[in-house]
Length: 500
Image 1 (cartoon, rainbow, N blue to C red):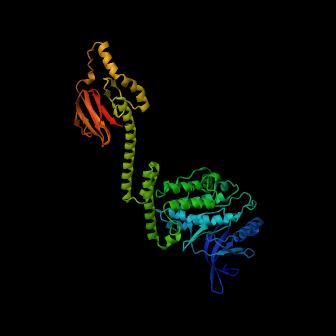
Image 2: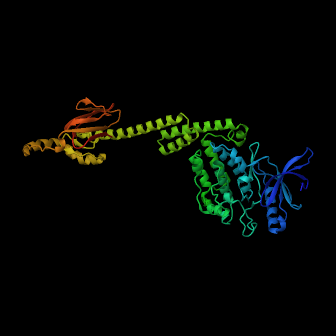
Image 3: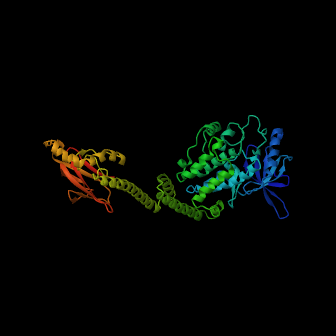
C-alpha cells in the first residue's frame, strides 16, 4: 500500500492495536506537505460499535484547536482501508524522549507536563477525556513543543455506551484505578495518568508495573506507589508530594482539574525562581548544557535564601528539607557549611535567650525575697543554702519554688534566733560521704565566668580533687548581678553544676 486518498505514504511512524501511523506527503500549490495518516487495520470496521466510536472520536477531535493537541485534518473513514489524517509532528514520543531529560533536574519534567496539562484542560473543556494518556501518546518536537496525540480512545463525557462490553480500554501502566475496575472515567482519570507519566519522567521507572498486565492492574487498584523521591534523590520533597497527590486512589483526593494541577506545578517552579519565559523545554533543547547549569544555579540560590529564612523563623523541619534538596543538587556548594553554622548558631542563641529570659525572671523574684540562687544553678548532688538546710535540687517551676521556699525564706531570721534560745546546741553528725575528696563538673555557658572558692575555674577541666565539704561558687555574667551559693561536695558521688 503506497497511497491513501491523495496522501502518499512515506514511512511508518508507529503501530498500535487498532491502526498503523504513517508519515505521508500531499501535493499542494506550494509543494509537498507532511501529514500523519492513521490507517486502521483491515476489518476493523466490521463492528458497527467500533465504527460509531471512531466517528464520535473524529467529530470530537476536530473541535480541538490547541497548540498542545495534535490537529485532526480530515476523515477518510469511507476509504478502503479507512484512515484519519492528522498534522505531522516531527519529534519523539515521551517514552523515547525521557532518556534525554536530565536526571539532576526533575523540574524540567514538571515543566513539560505543564504543557500536557494545558492540552488536557482544552480537551476537558470540550467534554473530551483522553482515556489512554501515556508517554507513547505524547510527542516533543524539535522546537520543544509538546503535543498530545492518539485520541483513538477519547470519547464524549456524556456517551457511556461506546466501550465494548467486557473491554477495558487503555494502557495498564498509566491507567487510573477507576478505569482499571471498568468504572466510568472522568477528567481526574486523565490527571492520574498525567501524574504517572510525570513519575516516569523524573525516575525513569513506572509506578505500578508488575510482571504481567493483570498484576499491574491489581497494583494500580490496590498498591501505593513508592515515593518517587526514593527512586530519584534529586527530587524535592515538594515535587514528590505533588506527584503522589495526583496518584491518589480516591479521585476526590487528586487534583480536581488540569488547571489546578498545572497551577500547583507552576507555583512550585516559581518558588525556585524558575520563570516560564526562560525555563522551558524549547530553551533546554536549544542549549542543553548552559540551560542545565543555569537552572541548577538558580535553584541552589533560591534554596539558599529559603534556608536562611527558615533559620530566621526557627523552622527546623523546613530548614532540614531545604538543606537536603540543596545538598542533592549542589553537593560541593560552600553554602552548605555556612548554612549549617548559621543554623547551629541560631539554635544556640535561641537556647541562651530562653535560658536567660527564664533565669533572669527567677533571679529577680528570688533576690526580692532574699533567698539564694537555687533556681539559677541546678545542682545534681546537694545544695547548702544560707539557712543551713541541705536541699536536693530538681527541675521546678517558678510557682513551685515560690510555694516551697518563700515561707522558709521569710522565717530564716526568726528560726535562727529561736533555735539558739529554744534548743541546746547539737553535736553535728559526721556524714561518711563528706570524708575524702570529690569531683566537681560544670555544664555552664561560655559567657559565664565561674569562681570556685574565689579562684576562676577552667570549666573544660572541671575540679577533679576537691575536699569534701562546703565550698563557695560565684557566677558572673555580663549585664547581670553576680550570683553566689554554697555547694556541698561529697566524696561518694560527683557534683555536677548546671546553669539553666
